[in-house]
Amino acid sequence: MCRRLAADLHAAGFRSDRLRELWGSAADAAIGRGDALPARRAFARDDHPLATIARLFGIGDPVPAEAVAAAFPATGVAGLEALGAVARDGGMLHPQLLIRPQDWVDDTGAGQWWIASDLDEAALHGALPEDHVLGVGGASLTLAGLQLPVPTGRVLDLGTGCGIQALRARLFADAVVATDVSARALAITRLNALLNGVDGIDVRLGDMFAPVDGELFDRVVSNPPFVITPRTDEMPAYEYRDGGRIGDGVVASFVETVGRVLAPGGVAQLLGNWETKDGVDGLNRVRQWVAASGIPLDAWVIERERLDPVAYAQLWIRDAGTLPGSPEYDRMLGAWLDDFEARGVSEIGFGYVLLRRATGSARLARYERVLQPVAEAGLGAALARSLDAWDRVSGMDDAAVAASVLLTAPDVTEARHHLPGAEAPSVIELHQGGGFARVLEADPALAALVGACDGDLAVGVLIDAIAQLLDADAAALRADLVPRVRELLFIGMLRFAD
Ligand SMILES: C[S@@+](CC[C@H](N)C(=O)[O-])C[C@H]1O[C@@H](n2cnc3c(N)ncnc32)[C@H](O)[C@@H]1O
Image (cartoon, rainbow, N blue to C red; front, top):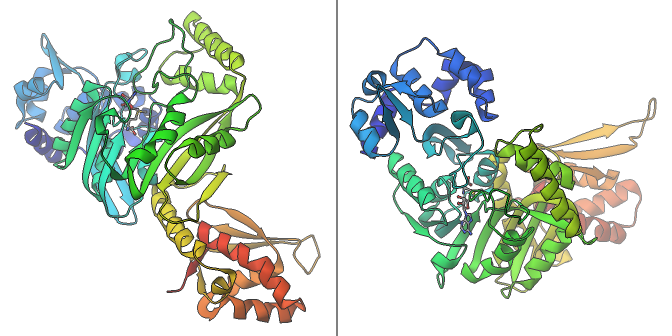
């Protein structure tokens, strides 16, 4: 039946580009913000199959049964009912799911899936039920973009929801195990795998790591239910975002435990929140969780955002469809602020965690804030390159780094800022076009070195020449520049020529 549904969606041209054409880019963006009205207006009078499908599954509006029958000739109304995708009410069919096209694009190519999920607030015209199965949101796309686009063996997707991470992982993995505490989420993941003709995704029900006890994975990906929620009776317990623990306990327990299911060299990637609590900075608390893992782990933790308790509570109250001005909103905001106050929480960080079961004696331990906007689609490749560079450079002493021949990455540019009328720049910056879009302040020696790395001469030879040019001590310049070369290799502004 799923194959027939896929055939109907395909025949109608149910793709993102066609939908954008149909309802326009402004309406498309509004849908992303949970507002379906502009799209609804755009095809109010259209009754061709694409408009019918967009209305029924793209937005979640009821549609007359005859129009649905015409739009789904292979599946038929009975087939859609059997799949649980629609429910009949007289002559109208009410969607029970959303199904939306989802594009993906990365260094390895481009493609598209159809992703089924539960009806959202716009379709329900109100707050979400507690067992809601989330569609593809901003966080889903962030983690999907972060996944290392490198062939691998077995992957665990913990908290799979609609299965977007599992589908993404399967592009590179031999097999995927997708787990969730929600049986409905697993049914939707199975539906999405079938709809997209993807095999090799094994779905399992259960809490956190329980469904995979005793197994090892080469990769673990998780957009876990990390939202910090006050544990009071009157708060809705949203399965899709709240793991039922106190504070940031879900992320803490994930970080402390994941090493047990990682094969040596295996990588875990997750999103999470961490609290700055009793004066201990959030990133330092993550460092403590990593240290508490019985398994030695490399860690690269990137904080992307920090919110105060009020802004954090507002974000998540609105996210589930409760708007300011209602008694419900005020009650929830009060509960959130009471909880943060009682537990000594002053700030909440959000970011990306990459952990790797360590195989050697050197440990990657990088905890940083990266706040500038980045193009998330290409980040997975950048992470993979950084890990490769770290593996190589952490095994080299300074003499070996100086003997390396390097290339400046093609996305690096230099900006020089001069005081008006001054000949020499007062600030030189190196800008990274891709990756984390880092901007690094450089002195003339470092700028000269980066400019000279063209795959010809070894770093040490270049440093000696720069020392001569700047009338500086060559040994001192090496001692200064080699550690910075290590950093530039890690962040991807420099690459090994071979
Ligand atoms: C934020 S959603 C992520 C969904 C999907 N992976 C994505 O990236 O869009 C978190 C998922 O974790 C599931 N979940 C909640 N509590 C869990 C638990 N204790 N163990 C495993 N999964 C859980 C929820 O049902 C939900 O599907």
